[in-house]
Image (tube, rainbow, N blue to C red):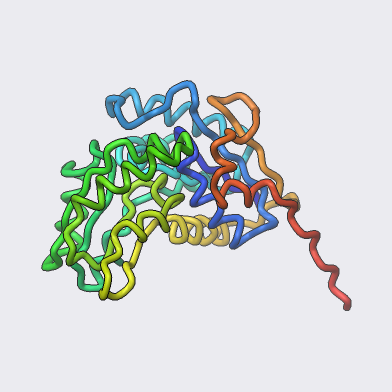
Length: 266
């Protein structure tokens, strides 16, 4: 089994780690775009063009599925990516986990990039899945960029600023950018209120990884055995995992050896 994941940067690590934990034997293709990042400030047309190039670089490695590990790319490029790659390669997008968060009753805060906060896309998700639940949209200025660089001081400053915008009564936070899942515990610590129940955080990585495996299982079995290898593509060129990725457990997980399969004693 081979699974590809794509993003402009290391935001794809959360979903990558989720896949690795579910299927440590799966070969992984990580397709990043250091030449074009960040994608957030780009026009939808320009972002889609970059995303297609990154996806096609991954597709050349013949994966059994492709995960779009970026909320912004999913919003703007998912229809185009599916039109180009499916049905040969199932394409799985990443959507903020607003529906399961709202099911808890709230109040809910959605931490997202400034470009996504207040967007018609996010407002539509709130309308469709969070009716009757108090929802606060929180723009997280500079947080994704700080996580991308593993800049601890900048991460702490951005998390603190977003926490100040989060109402005290919030019980649930949706992590509406894949980068934020890499610093989930810092976010929890910043928003937690003394004397209140533990803050519930909702990311998308686990659900996205599980959906990719479901899509693969519904297709004919892959022909070649996987060994848990990792291939990194940097704007289409083979390379190494960016150094900041190793600041996070999700990145370090990819550098560990995959245990050899245990032979069936029968």
